[in-house]
Length: 253
Ligand code: SAH
Image (cartoon, rainbow, N blue to C red):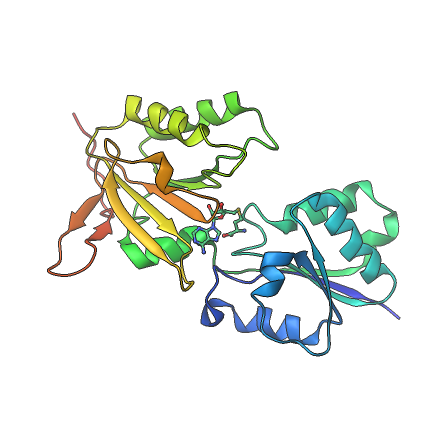
């Protein structure tokens, strides 16, 4: 009896932003493994046993899913957004590389989801219309000095920058420092967007400037987008402005 593992991204939160492929994989799974807040967001799935874990060791969670699959079970391992973007997919391959060779023969597939950056950008207009990059501000798995260097270089290269994990209870001052680095390389009027809980009932969007961006507005559920010199806003009579980055780049002289 051969088992399977589907590593799935369930999207930012809205049920209709989960792909059909992922929904189908969840419906066919006998075991669903994941961080408990993601499991709570899933629709009722009668066939499956849920294995909720807290935010601890992702490698251990991946190993648990692989062990179940190696026993012949059909397993879905769940990430928010896309599993490949700061999610469980890389942890699965780290576990496979270190684990028993039998894990390499398993039927494994990674199924894409809508990552927070894309969901947030779509709500705001088209801020990612030109070249962009994504940085994870958490220093759990890399030194803060590396984050500082990447922020400075991304700012100088004039990418639109998406900041995942901008803040947590354990990391209150880092966003403040990150904004300080960006302010050294970008104009004070550069557009900064805070997108919180996109696609969920408590969604909150804010369009501000680099000068006025308040780190206290960000929490663990917030994604920040930082516009380039070319990123523009279109005011509307009601609601937030549209924000977009034009497709064509004109080098400042
Ligand atoms: N794999 C996920 C990212 C996990 S890292 C994805 O592809 O979206 C967790 C970070 O993602 C959060 O700190 C936040 O920055 C961002 N995030 C996840 N879901 C979000 C949502 N619905 N709205 C805004 N940001 C979100």
